[in-house]
Length: 149
Ligand code: SF4
Image (cartoon, rainbow, N blue to C red; front, side):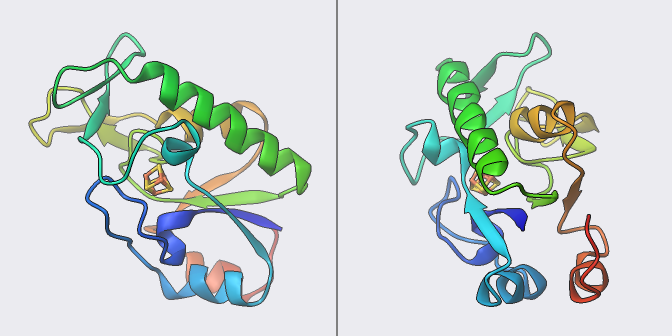
C-alpha cells in the first residue's frame, strides 16, 4: 500500500480549495493500492485556508501571521499513524508544500523563494523510515511497474 497526498488523488483539499490530480496517483487509488491523507486538514485547518510556510525555527506560520504549528504537527502525527496502520511501504507527496514537500520548500518569507528542505509531514515520514517521492519524480513509471517505493 502506498500513502499519497490526497490533493494528488483529486481531493480539493489544497489551501486554495483546489486539487492537483496526477493520473498515476489517481490510477493507484482506483486500483485500491493507495491510502489518502491530507495532514493539514487532519490537523484541523479549514479549506480554503491562508497559505503557510515553514519557518527557519521549525514553526509554521500563515500569511496572516498566525502560528499554525500545532495544527501542522498534529496532522502530520495523525497521518503517520494511518501510514503505519496500513503498513504503507512508501509515499507519493505533493512537492513544495510546507507539509508534504520533499527536497525543496518555500523559505518562510512568502516571497516564493525555494530552499532545500522538507515539509513537516515529509520529514516525519522519512524519520520513520518511509521512502518519500513527490509527483515531480518519475512516479508514473515507478507506480505502474508495481515496484515498492
Ligand atoms: Fe495536499 Fe499535503 Fe497540502 Fe493536504 S497538506 S493539500 S495533501 S499538499
